[in-house]
Length: 427
Image (cartoon, rainbow, N blue to C red; front, side, top):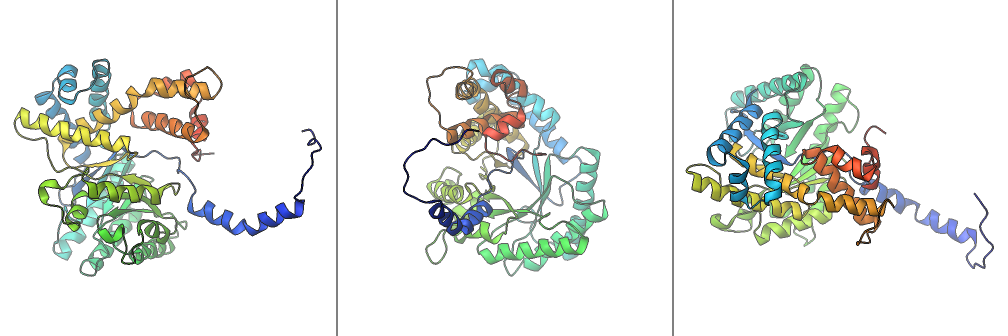
């Protein structure tokens, strides 16, 4: 490397070094608070199943019921595309991929629910269901039949249900350890958070469990559900979400918006509680800014309009669900909740069309940026991170094949990860 050409300067090296020393703590804090994307796959949805209804065949059953809904209400690509307004050139590929997904991996993320979907039960009954959930989850991961991500949602840290939630978490995690250890795809969900100290309490539980079982510090992470107004705006008028993430001490993995609890807390009438209501958009925007750069991922909520009944009613619900999923994707909410098996076809149709319709343009812009060809858009590095992340998400969810991205760009997976600003897993 050659020496720098002689040019006139004013600042001495001591000035630069002094500034570096003065900002060293700031550098360390920024690196801690904003580590960037974790570089792992993010599921496109989460399915909640009441603990007493959960079984070894739940995920497979959801796929079968979703396929049955397609067979009954949209038996071919043309019919499905006509209902949802999918472009003709995408109809065949999207429909084929949706059916293949429902046969191969219908659920990407499953939560055994001990909260709203389960309710209040006798302690003996909840203990038994928590122990059974641990056994079934462990068996599914061992057998390779589990969704990529699976875990539990326990009751919240509010005073009247706190002890029960802690005990259920304990029974479940202890059962997993007895069955061979914590699986890699384990996810824990803490609902109805309304104060940072409740997050801190969850951190303490994780620390205690890790110490008791000789696990690495930080092994247990958890999601936070944003379902209360206090989680978004505190009594002092400050945004609270960032404080919740900070209270998690690096363990918070996701923020999940709760459509109906949050809407109700804001006084929204039942008929208007939806993921696209203005109060939802405000909450999710605050969540998005608070989570940016932290490695904490976002999930939108759900719609309770279910695609059941006569074909006309199913089609109406499908169109609504498809529109809401597409809306979330455009707003960078790449995950959501699904409440019924018949919502899976429209979840995957919306996701697959979103990535396939933008594939050619995204690849072309990436090729132009890396110097392999010209283009009519001058992209900056930040936009290239978004382009690479978009393509990686498309591959991860099955919307596009890896070769459709790596072939024309000449970039392997690791190269795309680096352009996306992600930590390259395994490096």
